[in-house]
Amino acid sequence: MSGPVSHVFHFASAASPADYLRWPIQTLDVGSQGTRNALELAENKGARLVLASTSEVYGDPLEHPQAESYWGNVNPIGPRSVYDEAKRFGEALTAAFRESRGADTAIVRIFNTYGPRMRPDDGRAIPTFIRQALAGEALTVTGDGSQTRSICYVDDTIRGILALALSDHPGPVNIGSPYELSMADLALLIIELTGSRSRLRFIERPVDDPAVRRPDIGLAKEVLGWEPEVPVKEGLRRTIEWCAREPLPARSA
Image (cartoon, rainbow, N blue to C red; front, top):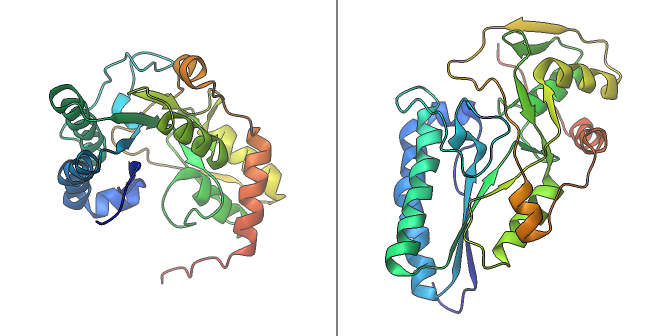
């Protein structure tokens, strides 16, 4: 690559369970060799490397909410491990480059970002619920729906990432919303906001699906002056409006 580079953002990875379960080796490759390639590019250019990690490094957490000091509870050979461990290895490699070679690096742990331009068929909860509600289908909630997530609108996530990139903090830093809600409540909220007549349909819960998820964002507030600003209902309305303008994917026979 010719010319000067100030920052390298390594965000390459399948993030949807449907995708990383379809491409397990490729997901591990991009978290390992892909991270090394990005680190070496940044090192050669004298650039700051920003690694997109994930709340999934905390696994099915035994501490709640999750602070950056928590080491996590991850099944290293479970079906989700191809994503979880790829990100955990990426963090370890990034930290090693920083400690042993003086690389300028930052690690951001992203929590459940949503917003316009998500694929409606990517398998994640929000686009799936919106697609089903707009089509008048039952919303498929896994387990009993009591498991929680903390969802953060994409604009807020990007602000946090850029704030970290432009700082000198190495991370890891949690970027996410502390607003926590159950999957059943999220589905009902989307039904309300779409004006749909859909109902809930409960299906089997995936293996190793985390029971809870909520970031402690104290560090992001302290070192970046960052916290989310877009209310959940407003972010969901924007997302629903975008999805409603897009053609729904054809259903397979």
